[in-house]
Length: 166
Image 1 (spheres, rainbow, N blue to C red):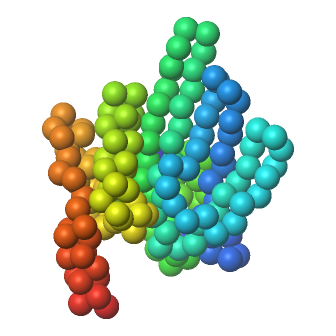
Image 2 (cartoon, helix red, strand yellow):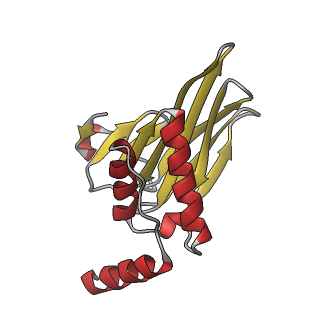
């Protein structure tokens, strides 16, 4: 992944970040686990492009298999960037985004999906959770440890901090 200045990438005139999703059953599956989609464009029965406004946080899951089983699984939690912000490139994401979490390998990916479910169960939409929480989940899972759950109390503290930084 390469971090490029905005001037070196072609940006959407509306400032949207586009994610190409593919679904070829039991072969290639790219999907959004959470996020507020601003625009949804169907290309054909197997492909579509979803778009996110600057600042939106979303989880992008990629999985691929062959005749012998899973060959790749990955989850990225990304913040869509505004036109003046630097970003990191990511396959199938144009132009790229701020990567908050990037995990590979099904055992670790399933732990991330469980952390997303836990956040949801706490009554917080995962796309509204503090960006630092997704960095925490990335670091803990990468280190082989269990991440702390995102609670409603943590979320309220994040909202107060964001308001104070205003």
